[in-house]
Amino acid sequence: MSSLFGRPELLCVLLALHYALLSAAVTPTAPGPGDVFKAGGDCVIQWDVDETGSCKNLSIDLMSGPNNKMVVVTNVAQGLHGCNSSVSPYTWTCPEVDPYSAIYFYQFSLGGDSTASQWTTRFTIASASGDSDSPEQAQQPDGKDIPWGNGHLSNDNATSSVASSTDTPHDSVSDSPTASATGMIRCHVFSIMIV
Image 1: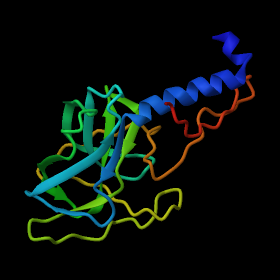
Image 2 (image 1 turned 135 degrees about the horizontal axis):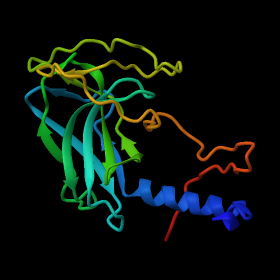
Image 3 (image 1 turned 45 degrees about the horizontal axis):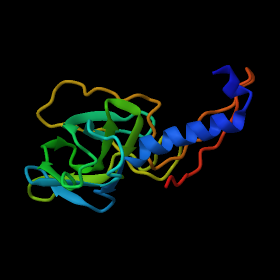
Image 4 (image 1 turned 180 degrees about the vertical axis):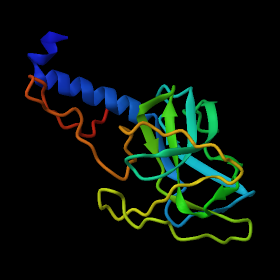
């Protein structure tokens, strides 16, 4: 490994390839802003697949909360073969939640690895009659204009588990890894097309 630090460009390429392989397998496409699903009705989730990827253990979680402290509302599916195009779109029954609002999104994880998660944008789960409230917060804690709120299952009195604070929804961008004074290198990961 120390030989890689002597060749920072090689390390950057390897990191970029690793990231591209992890993130290319499943790309969420729906739901999105403006989509409304009624509790008790069908919730439809869709993603594009890289059928050459390794995504046989796909988990999907319904989430809420701010980008920097996401909360799992409930698990939607586990162990899906996410690279099988016949699995997407995936339909499940929308749960009763509190509040009914445009604060929900899905997190896609492969093999339980939340560091390579992908997210949909926020969408609304409304009451069975179609009623919903505005999100309780208009901006993220960092000031970005992405409304949010904390939601939970309406019949759930227990606290939902908190996702890792290092998780970052696709609404934001991260340059990883970062530099430090200890000899680490900084590389910016760009899109790479592998043929």
